[in-house]
Amino acid sequence: MTIFYLSLQDFLSKPFLKFSLLPLVFSLILFSFLVFYTYDLFFSYIDEIINGTFLAWFFSFSIVQFSLAFLSAIGGFFIIIFACVFFTMFIISFLTPYIVKKINQKYYNYSIENEISFLEVLFKAFKFILFFCILFIIATFLLIMPFVSIIIYYGVFYYLFHKLLILDVLSNVLDKKNFNEFYKNSSPLYFKISTLVFFILSSIPLFGLFLQVFYVIFLTHLSYQKILNLKAKHDG
Image 1 (cartoon, rainbow, N blue to C red):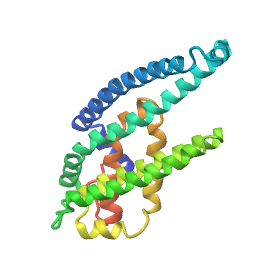
Image 2 (image 1 turned 90 degrees about the vertical axis):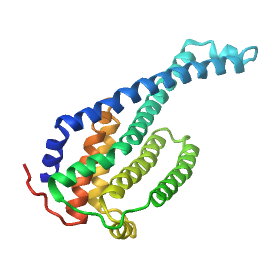
Image 3 (image 1 turned 180 degrees about the vertical axis):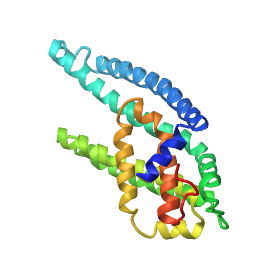
Image 4 (image 1 turned 135 degrees about the vertical axis):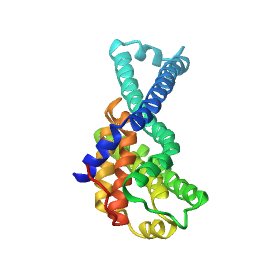
């Protein structure tokens, strides 16, 4: 809770609040347009396929059209949520070095002697994305189980969310030695619980996207205090 209040205090400061608004607005505008365009394209494609076939009679029923519209709306909702979350993460990743630097200067004064190379971080990110793609394909084959498939999809996207968010923060907080030691084992439970809560919050439209900077701030404090065993200069 100490880390939470410390992170909240930092997040509500003027510089970090400005960082939160820009990616939120940009990602919402962009992906709302994409989902609308995809939605229209989907029905145009369906019309072209069934036009002049016996399926046209089946799709003429109002209940069928309503069901398709409902399923498309649900699909569009998940698309825009997940797309906005990861797109916002991508934008915030360019701000993470600045966020970590400010927090380090204010609370910890930890100096990195041997930094992690960009290629090493890129390679790990590529491995995580590749494994995510494999999991996504498997989850897609399980769509025959309606309610179970939603849970599986959430699990698959949480995996990518957790891995990329932790990688983004740790690559800026830790030196090469501590970074490699961290990845020798599975992430500690408190990291998993934190990112799971963040992922659930990210599923809430607007609210979760606005908090992306807070996630980085919280995990930065968590990394300094739990991995490097440093104590903040002042806790409030």
